[in-house]
Amino acid sequence: MRTVRFSDRLAQANDFAMAVEDQGQGKPIVLVHAFPLDHRVWQWQIRDLSARFRVLAPDLRGFGRSMVTSGVVTMEQMADDLASMLDALGVKEPIVLGGLSMGGYVAFQFVRRHRQRLAGLILCDTRATADSEEARENRLRTAERILNEGTSFLADQMLPRLCCERTFRHQPEVVEKLRTMILESPPEGVAAAARGMACRSDATDLLGQIDCPTLVLVGQFDAISPPEEMEQMARAMPKASFVIVPDAGHMAPLEQGQFVNQAIQDFLSCL
Ligand code: MLT
Image 1 (tube, rainbow, N blue to C red):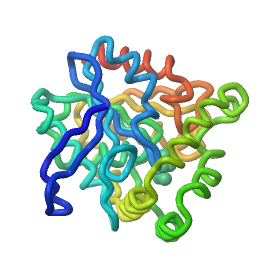
Image 2: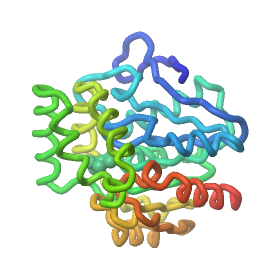
Image 3: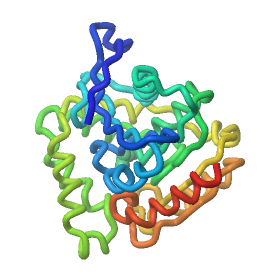
């Protein structure tokens, strides 16, 4: 894990320090984690894909070992942080950007703001739509509660929906790993990202314009971004292929690492 420093346009003060797992050499692949987690959700992809590619898996602003900004951290800000990270690392060639759930919301903003830096896109267990009014209000209430109580109630609330039943039965260590990540996430950072997700814009209008090769992946039993919704999203994108990950829920890359890695490698070999 290394730390990358760049000037912080959001806080307008000093530097921002972003922690990033940087493994391997070759075509750069940037993998962006879900909420309220960190780069470790990509552990199987970091381990295996780094044999052939340069895998960069950052902790987003407010998560893992990256610096925390309180208040609201928007998906736009997170996308700009990724671009600054690439600049700071001297990565000039176009990247393949992968986003899991909230990481996908960030990826849509990266498409809007840094399209020229993209060679391909991997959208995993995510959605293009914005929150409904009810979901938005719920998120804002959750953000307040996180600030008051910490993240342990969030772990209890979210875990049953993150993994499929089979993962709970046969891979309890995956569930425990996710619990650890949630408990280790700094409450201020988690609350700021929850507020940022609440005010994220709808990216449905963007789908038809995404002309880079795109892989859309979804867990067969994803209860948060279900396969039907993701298939519809893939159909709206001119160059997307759609893959269902068997025996996985919302955390497909962690629940079924081998299958997801094969799907990603097949996709990358066609670029
Ligand atoms: C995530 O996994 O990043 C979250 O489920 C996204 C969300 O709450 O919309």
